[in-house]
Amino acid sequence: MTAIMAKKKKSPKQGSNTIALNKKARHEYTLGEKFEAGMSLQGWEVKSIRTGKVNIADCYVFIKNGEAYLLGAEIQPLNAASSHVVCDPTRDRKLLLNRKQLDKLAGLVERDGMSLIATAMYWKNCWVKLEFCVGRGKKLHDKRADIKDRDWARSKERLMKHDKR
Image (cartoon, rainbow, N blue to C red; front, side, top):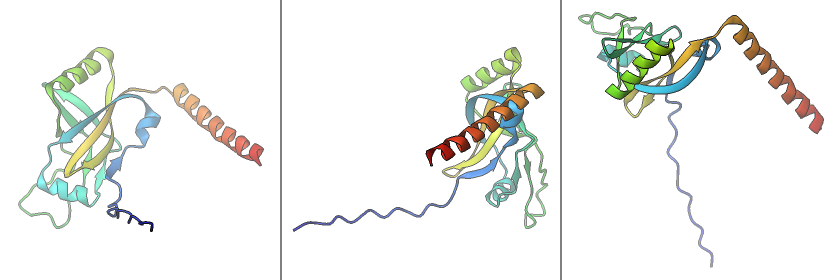
């Protein structure tokens, strides 16, 4: 007599946790080390983020007075937002980092001339998190080299695919 074990049912996945991506960042910058930070948000901003009204394409992180801020992120207010709340879609939002991370980032930006580029915004449990990378801007010839390498890899894959047949 063989016992058949029932498979454990998996909970249905709710989709991706990603809220917004900055796809231009990899093209415009040579990205290095990644950091994750929480964000100080107002209530209407969280509601707008839940509906996906966020754009982080042209935003970056800067250090001022020993604190990190997100500049240029656009969160569009909802039409049903309270009338007594003044909504500023492009306000500077404080990032929540510990002192050791802030000191490291300040050193990279001031000494090495690096930039802090926001690459993704996502949910982690019930918190909104921002992923940003340390990066250096690419020159035009660097971008051309990347495009050339990408095209070569694509054509190489095609050749290998046709050779296998």
